[in-house]
Length: 543
Image 1: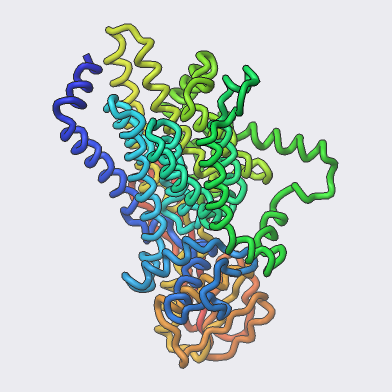
Image 2: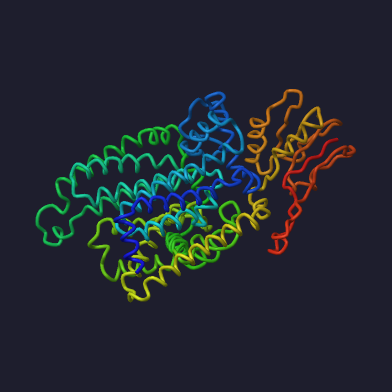
């Protein structure tokens, strides 16, 4: 029987389990790092904005505007969160300023979250090795995690924070030792407070996570009997200390919000319907509709996000096997009232329900704003597999569990094949700036008097400015950044770098002496799969 074998593995040969988990984790981590500097093809303007500010931080100790050691980085007006930029600056300091160093940062944050999650699995499912193995595979290659971890977005910093929060919440809610509970709770408070510096959605979700933890400390038996306090003196002390620590960690945030009014909310107001002049009933209706979409089959299974920076363009945010087991988990939790009797389960259940709330305040479906939701789906699938195994007849346990593992591995292999074979050409459309570095180098090789760079949209100026740090900025070939094609005043000996969508706007009577406008040649697998060659998004003309 599978269970007996796994129990034997757990009791007598636990070292074998560690080896197996290490192998699975190393394989998953390998695929996360594999060709990360070249796939996705091109770097979106958000990525190069992070790179630009990290580069100026390393060189001058300032952001791109000359502000020394800022807490939040103005960038192109939305004020980027600090942790990812400072971490990237550290990578630049160690490995040099490059596109590879930029993307190594985000994958490393994912790997940190992955290792913490494995530690969480060993804590929660210590006597059930097959659940630890399942969680390690599912978290390691989950579609939403995989795609986003390979792109330099600040949301990657949020993942290790939330996983660590769950780990310390488990310790605080499950251990009998008062000293251990206190220590875990204080660490938990520090994590909740500092998480607001990771990603924008954490400003709401961190507050909700703290309220969830506090709610889990309530003694509903006392509340029902109306005798004494419904929160013990010990738990009340813990909560007060946690509030104090959270307030301390938020002091820099509060000072910045006062000094720069609207700086931390401007981006939200621009993309959310919350401040729109529409009736409250309509806002509530939009919220309910958006929230429900994150629990519906389109997002979960078939069409999570059209944005090719967040996904490969088709398929859901999670694997079908993970979703089915998570549904079993939720049904068991509710039907058997597990959420009332187990504080940690209650914490996971409520946090899981709350995780899409920030995303629901914005109309478009977006994997980034529900990035941490995947943690709860993987945890839920582990519990679901445990419950399914428990209700199966003995003869069915082994084949069904083996089938589920095989199905998960098959889903993972199909996803990886799609990502590394079919997605490369699609990703060019997502980055909207493919080949800027190579085009800049080609322009320099033409020995121009001046290089024009057409930055449309406005924020794409970061694409060339970051490359000027990676390739070098040459006084004899100055770069002139303009934001309208009409501002380009080409003279003989000049080069113009622009994007393919602005081809028709680059007009001049001067003869072209050199230009780049290449397209990719598809390999056999891409042709069979139906991909098509895409032009380089970045073009070059020299006169």
